[in-house]
Image (tube, rainbow, N blue to C red; front, side, top):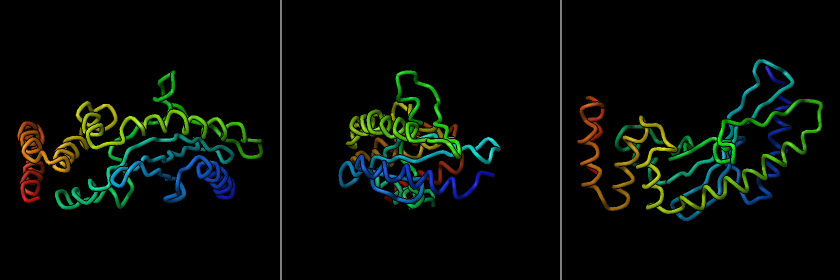
Length: 198
């Protein structure tokens, strides 16, 4: 297991740099930028060590969090995604880079990791913030969820109707739920009932 001191020091150093580019801290591995009163751009980190005590690999995950979805999820399926700060859509940063592949930034204890931190933060500031800008409205977010590129299908079937609801298109949400009812089963039928009560 990686040494706690190394992990804490590394995350603290990265946190300082993320604050400098205008992000706010939610917790040790989650940061955000207010895009408007309803939408946050998020940066979270997947952490791997691959069994080494002197290595930390970070996968920055860039997301968009629509605040109202958490409350509506709680009303319809009993799970508040906002409480756990789960973005509505997200992607590993590597897929936003020109190479478009899963990328981790590797940090080794005892080495000067400054240039790696700088590179990662610069990519977040450049590619991550561009991702935020293209999805900072409810309309743009709905279009992204409809395409399904940045959301798992299991999440999309609940999120999209709720986004329609937020956009004043409750009937469109009901039509979407009915269209997917056969493949999703009883739990989805319960979701339809709660959705109609909104």
